[in-house]
Image (cartoon, rainbow, N blue to C red; front, side, top):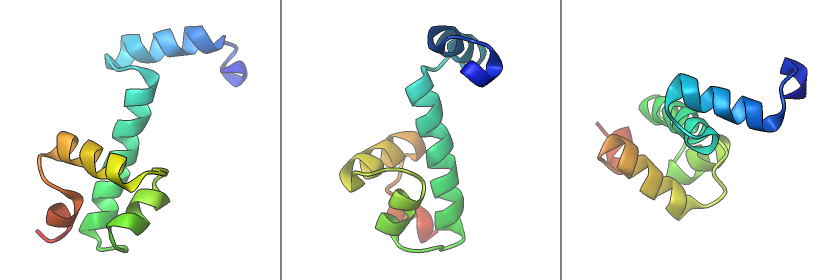
Length: 79
């Protein structure tokens, strides 16, 4: 935020205005997209992919992925 000459709250508001998502949700979606790309390339198993994209809790990653894509990460990677 400081590198963009904005306060943290200004940055949060701008992200919300541009994307319609909270900062946390915006970052989660980006991480899930990266995870989907890794799973398509078969770059490791589900837990390796989850940790590689920044999720520290595997069950939270699986729930988030399933909510975003409608299938579990293991099903997504095997299609």
